[in-house]
Length: 374
Figure (cartoon, rainbow, N blue to C red):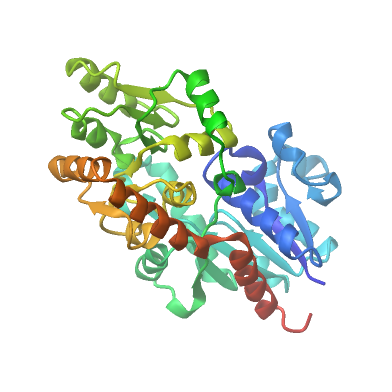
């Protein structure tokens, strides 16, 4: 039996993104490999909803005056004493970090690197944040026994930006929440449309409303198309730019902003949408694309970087800033039921490579290869 410890800060404290990644990974490991023992280390507990996902006896938090007073220092340094006390075989940093000097303990370490966007697009980050991320991520890549990238694009960035041997980096894709894989009834769809006051037909975009996600291009692309747009995500200053354009063009009744949906409501929304449009400039992977494929919704996304890797051959690819090309893609799909059906079926088939059992098998192979003596 392996005793595997996880950096679970994001598991308990992040509602989306890294939090979803952490919760999904630990969920599938516990489901498909219950013979192993999993311990979750976190400086603090977040929402009770996440705390209730797992038994309390596998949660570890800082103890003692120094560790509880300086929780971040515990997570990055002093935690290695607790890992030794708990007889951890492997420690997995789920969000680009491992404790400093863990390589001196005899405990094997794995780190997941999601993206290096702070290097590719430094203007999107404060200088102090870029410096901190660079220090932590580079250290983790240099000293972890195994690096896992969530896409081939991220693997290339790790090799190129940090000078890491490509043989040290394994790609294991990210899955998505099981809600997106369940069949939805027509009544469920009607109830959600009524609850949210939505039109019967719309195109969908999901993700934090920020410049890199490029939602303004979608708004511009549908100016002359008779289809509403629903945008789901946390609003930032960039949302004001969208609102100004929307008001200027008289599109207030055609662009709907939503946030705070439950996972079940979000998955229902995907299944209702006619098309999922995701013209992001750059991502580490782009999990919303996978969510759309599982939801049997046609996808339009960016034609470079990780996006073809996530979307497969059946999705429609565009230059993210080419408004005319995006408009044409939207109209072409809306006007052809045959095209819609082909994209839906082939996209769903492609998504099966991200199934829980496949990912769980890949992870357990990695862990056992690190500890052949166990």
